[in-house]
Image 1 (cartoon, rainbow, N blue to C red):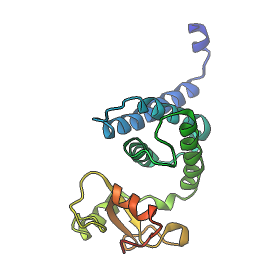
Image 2: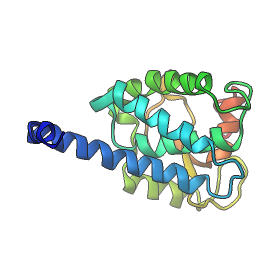
Image 3: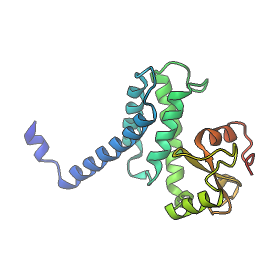
Image 4: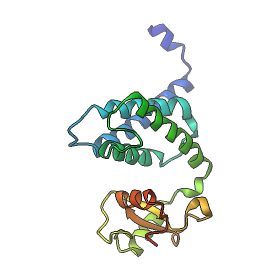
Length: 182
């Protein structure tokens, strides 16, 4: 078995190492967010989802997707809804994979959706570090909401992006009122 490993090119080894690093970062973020949950079985579901994503999407992924995926997984584990059912099962895993496999390439094609760290700090400063929807103080769980949706021509600029709590952001989009916080 060791002989087979030595025949692997250095480039393939490096790609494998990078994949492991990314997986551990994403998995670590998701686990940090789910600490304290009574049911630990969903962690297997999370890990399997990452494996599927890496196999199918590979280099199409962009910087920043790990944080979005970790938030998404945390939300799914904390609030099991009708879309994925109450039980963690392979059907739910497949639906989760299908959703992300459609979303990640779309994000990868549009690199303009990413805010720089300086832009994020300026947006938070202008909003006085308060959520646009609930007006409470923002913590480390902050999302940036496009007032004019990206899909409708809204740009990722300081004037069009507002800070909101992750849960508030989810509520804005779940209601279908994309500009509710404007």
